[in-house]
Structure formats: structure tokens, C-alpha cells
Amino acid sequence: MDNRTQTQTQAVNTGVTPFRISNIEQLPTLAQDESCHIIKQYFDYLEQTLSNRESVVDVEQLREMLNEVSGFIRSNKSQLRADGYSRMLKRLNNIYAQGLRNNNDRAFTRTAVNFADILNTVSQSFPSYDYSESVGLLLHYMHKMFNYREEGWIEVFEHLISMSDSIEIMELIKTQHLQEIQNWVEEGVDNLFALMDEQLEVIDNIDAEILLLDQELLQRRKTIAETRSSGFNRVIIPIARAREKQLIQELFDRRAELISERIAKLELADLLDENIQEFTDRLIEIRRSAMIQLVWSNPGKS
Picture (cartoon, rainbow, N blue to C red):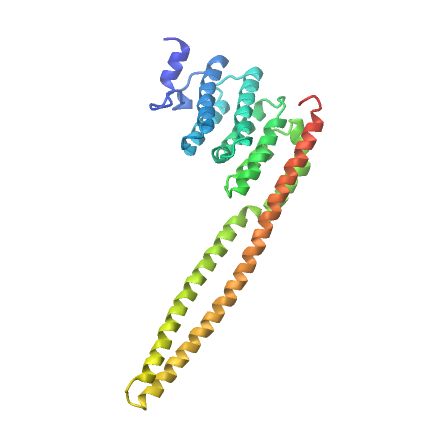
């Protein structure tokens, strides 16, 4: 049994993807060619799955697989060198660049956190690579995730700012563009969607309560109308009618309070929506500005 066969025998999961690493700790130290062969199989499966528009993508499976790749790279078992890192990054960039041209990019977007994790991991050991395309892709997917209300956008950002400071382009954009995003984060931009959902839930509850009040008001009005046409004791009827009128007034007062509360919640929801849209617009502008700087800093790159 050769080394590659032995490695795959010791480090596989049973199922449709027999190349998957089941336990990094039990792996022997591999030669770079063996490590690249394993990573290539992961990326082949990733690209095939993401590019198949007719099938339903198991995003969680892809995220698990990309986590395995990241863990494998972080371990001291892969023994990757500069040429191995370079081929791997180029392949990964090519895969995620396809998401820019794919209208159904949700699977690309939802796995972008793991893409960012791999880039961050590799950057610590291989800072000499030209990460301009990678950073541009991450900025694109970070904006997409925020636009799709995917909470993982903040994780993409955290991976971005954690990339090695010795990378020239990271030094270029960290002090400007990423710092502005950091300022927004510190002001609570990552909580905007949760706050919006909370306000909309309160508004829905208010609407439901108003509907119940309207139904009760209708029923009590019917009761008053019925007492007017009934043949009950003339003394008792006015007392019952007065009590009903008092209850109806209390219901109207409560309804007015709910409407005022609803208006206030709608105003807050509108303000939150404006903040979300403002940050969305800024993400687009930041990405465009950063990409212009990245292009100018790499004049020889098309």
C-alpha cells in the first residue's frame, strides 16, 4: 500500500465523498503532492456542486468540508510550500469568481465565511501571495451576505481584518476602508437586523390585538342594538346599556393607545431600515473604492 492509499484509508469518511478527512490528528505528515491531491478533491467537489444550477446545494455539507480544509492547512500535517499555496489560492479564487456571474449565488455567499477562513489561515503562512483578487471577492461576498441578511457577513469581515498585516494590500485597505466598517460595527450595525425583526414582531402583535379589539367592539355594538329591541325590564335595560357603552369607550381608548404605539414602532422600523440601506450603500462604495486602490497598486495585473 503506497503512502497516498494509506493516507486515504486512515483519513476518510464513508459516504459519497470518500476523500474527506475524518480525523486530522490521526493523519501522518504528508508530502506536499499528497496534500495537494487531497485539497484538489475537495475543491473539485466544491466547484462541481456550486456550479450545478439544477441541484439543491447542501450548504452545511460544503461548509463542513471547507472547515476540514482549513483545519488541514492549519495543522502541521500538510507541509505545503509556496507553490502549493499558490495553486490552491488560484483555484479557490477561480471557484468563487464564478459566483459573480451566477444569478443564483446564495450557495457561494453562504459558504463565503469558510472561503474567508481559508484565506485568513493561508495568509499567516504565505503573505507573499498577491491577495488583491481574494480580498475583492471577500468584499463582494461580505456585501452580498449583508444584503441577504446573512449574519455571517461579520465573520467575513473579522477574517479580513485578521489577515496578515505583512500583506501589502491589507495594510492599504485596513487603515481606510476596513476601519470605516469597524466603526460601523462598534456602533452596532451588526444588530440592525435583529432590532428590525424585533420591531416588526411587535407591530404584528399590535395588529393582532387591534383585530381582536375590533371584533369585540363589533360584538358589543350588536349587544346594545339587541337590548334596544328587546322586551326586558325598562329599568334594567338602561343600566346594562350604560355599562356596555362604558366598556366600548374603554376598548376605543385601548385601541387608540395601540395605534399610537404602532405608529412609533413603524417610525423606528423606518429609521432602522434607513440605517441598513445607508450601510449597504457604504459597503458598495467601500468595495468599489478598495478595488480601485487594489488595481492601482497592481498596475501590471489585468
